[in-house]
Image (cartoon, rainbow, N blue to C red; front, side, top):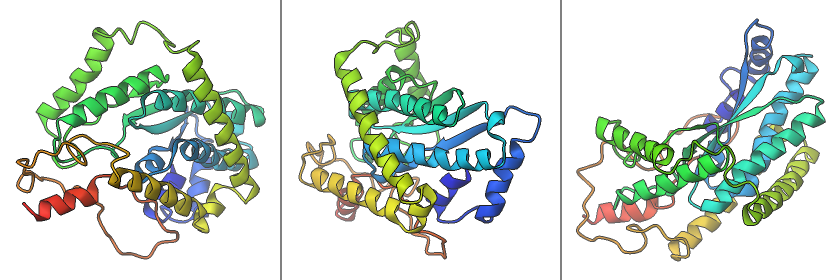
Length: 307
């Protein structure tokens, strides 16, 4: 996903021509090449659901244009969307359903009918270092949304992944959460448990419609890459992130143990094995990279400084 690398790092692996040529070259090989589109970056950076869906389609559309121009479109067998699932339970279910619907519309516009595979993982944006056990509740509902939304693959996130290195205990908890959903909630017994739910289907339709309008606006303005280069995408995601941050700071968006019901005895300074905040790495980049940031970062930094 060279476009995803560009959005995340600010630079191509080599340059646009070379990276896109490599994508085309992969499709000439006698193998089942799967195209990958990383949408998780946008959610973790603060994009709203409509933006996530629209940018996912615009991101994928850049690849489809390249393959069409190189007459390699017929070689495309499948496409993977890597998605980050947040805590708005029903809306996240609808987001995943809308993503699949939008892909079907986009692929048909190119005269192809190929499946998309949705790979989901809980969001990092609403995870906290204080009262970290609450993260288990967050990842549980997010994994539920991922399954009910029709994800093909669900990867859980360790409850302490924000600040602690990979460890057996957290890995086992994360795996057990998924096993509980499968074995005790029987999520593997029904293929589309939310089908026919008026509420979810209505949200799905509304999100897809709004995302389609934004997608058309992006394409009319030159496409995803052009908007990345002129920083339109970054600015719109930053605006959305700022609005979310203001709601969090005003406690209109609640993270238990973080901005409400704080445990003042909770000390985390000596427990940090990983740096849990945005890392600054000044360097020359082609575009401004899209930066992931958690909602609770500033509040946590303030609490840590007073421990």
